[in-house]
Length: 289
Length: 341
Image 1 (cartoon, chains in turn orange, green):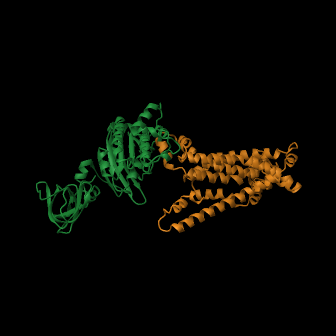
Image 2 (cartoon, one colour):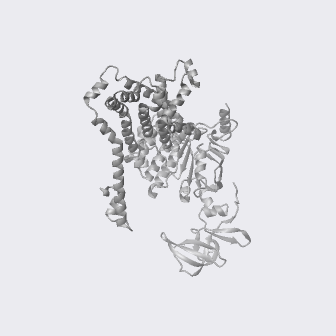
Image 3 (cartoon, one colour):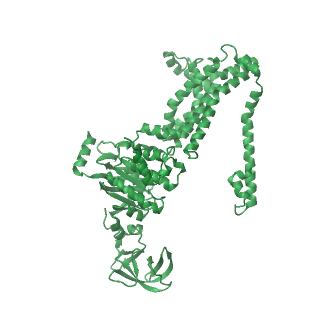
């Protein structure tokens, strides 16, 4: 057990000069603490999943999801999240790259603007969004000219999800690009690549694991976005809203099937992205050929 | 087209000048200055202590550092700096291959893919395989960067540069982690491939023998300045100033009796025991200490006037023994450069 860690094995064989007994106690103690920490985190994070599965019966799932149109919130959430993610990748990737390379004027200010939505309570974001893109809002008038309405529309849902999720992608992508040594990008261009070629052949593959993690997190946030969404886009009803409404109308048993649906719809992509990026990272690190 | 005009003018004046450098870079700690020209097949080794500005000069020649003044031209075409509204070539067209220190490989690509990266047209498999063989990397062709040792990484970086269509080869301590036994072969390969292309080469190193082995000119850099450029042996035998002498290994400085602002520079390897006035300057001193130095001995010699220096000799006199030593034609140096460039 404790001998799995390098410190433990050193201590156990008595190789550590000086204080072998003390070292052994420290090594065993820290291993025990780490295991305890892992247990607590797993319980805290995975406990609710276990409870969710235990309290669901096949009958209640069929009753909730069986009727025609019952799956509509799923399609709404999937569609809006996909569009929000697309816009995020399109706009957020270059932004994150320029931030990581320090090529943006007023970078600190831009960064603050990206982090701010994370700091603001989602409900407050929702209220502010009404002022901004609602029918009476500044941008709302402009949007009306192109026949877009900023409240209770599919468009509004996308905007609200974007606000809640985009910072996760941009910050993740920023970190991913920062981890790529700019000197090897220079090397690629000196070896004949155009800047975009170097980005595609060098930067992107190296940043991909981090980008995937950021994208997965953003996807989960977008699918689960609720605070800003319920203010700006009560309709069309996405899954989080559906859960909230079912909970209010029918209690736990009515809400849990939709909760399961949301988890099943939102989770596979992040999990796959995590597994893939872990593999890609170890491949780059040379662990696996 | 101003660029074309400038290129034409440059080719008209100097047909074979491959690399023309006249640059100044403001660094936080020091201002780096350098000026030299290299023709086809010419090589320059820049030698200096770490922090002297060697790497800055290489990166400036590659156009990766903003120059505060001056230009760098490869085959007459602007690569760094600005001149009459002419803007530098994009990196891909500069014809510059750079081997950095520490080595920068593409970590997600195999050794083979790294080496072949810069080959644009007709990436011939046999050519890459041939190069890998000469670099001693055939067995590692499919390994990735992280799995390699420092010396192997340097071979890959060197191979990647050599395989690309370069006109100027820039090497930053390219063999520092390679086994001493393998160095000469890699050095020969490098020189052969550079000569095949009629390319110019610039090597920077803090190892004087490595700098001399590169062939061609030797430049001494200190504090951001190119203090002296000359033949590899000439600079070592006739340093232009006391500082250059110190950098190329002279350890003792004995004032010239007729001119106290100048010194005889004593090199530990250019000293004989005994009075041999026909070969140079005879000094009388006391052996202060003796220790083994490879197959020879290193002795510290103290003069009655107070100066001390070390000598490398085959037979070690005992400590405290008074003896004559002959410095072989010692160069006379001043505090300032005597042959300023």
